[in-house]
Image 1 (tube, one colour):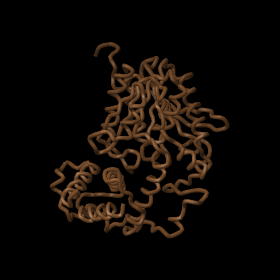
Image 2: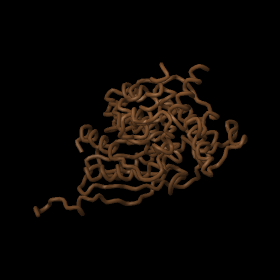
Image 3: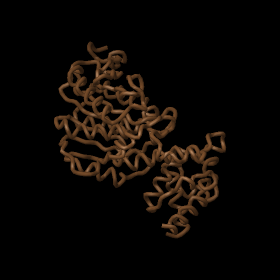
Image 4: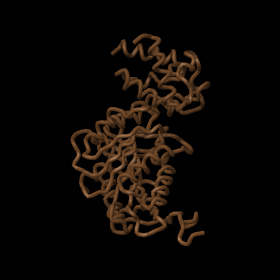
Length: 282
Length: 86
């Protein structure tokens, strides 16, 4: 074997658990480092909301590992009240999550040894990543996987999906809706498939609107539209057009954020890695 | 849109949302989508959203029951009813 050639062992990225301080909260995170140093770039992963985080966890792990093997460090962290981070989910609000994301971004900048930093987000996480990109104009790249573009519609659809699931599985022993369960609109908290979401969080999510105006972030921006359709949806196309260097791609991929069980995320990861290669040269 | 065209569009959406490698025309109008093609609440949700976007209609919570979404025929009937109400 040629000296210095990567073997299966050396090509494997190193992974370690770290803690990130965000105000009074402690965020748990995992760092994926490539086998050679310094990393060519680093990506901060921004996870989606509630059940969508759980469903997509494995896909994020696989994407982070693929990035690390290609020489790009990755930081996956849990927002306050999620995963292993401190706090509780019902206490969570988007203000705290925005602070968490900034703390994770600072950590990546100061600790991962990469000169170029990018953001990769899914669903509501993509919306938060897009917001941060408007502040961090030096960002090397921005990857948005099926971003939530209109928070109010996102809330409506998420609640409806929950209702559909309960109604359609009631005949299989699922939970029947009672009148009280269908009158949650005025409650202080709503139940998102078992996640109690505060009224404040609902209002903050409803205010999310990525389509409102042209974006200042000038760097390479990828909008991945994940669905069974062959063409990009009008909303995703419009979002990409608002970026100076925006590109929307359709990826034939089942919904990785709502599918329970293992999902072959190869199409999504493959499309993202190809784009990263073009955008960052990783 | 004719009734036949609507049914074909529903079949196309079933194929797209279930990632089936079959021609839409191979789905029979009265196939039980859950039993024959494995439709579940996750991909049914995707079909519903696509129908709303394509036809400019809006479903209500009470529309979602097993019978209404059991076949191409029953889904097309619901879409027609919603279009008439709009």
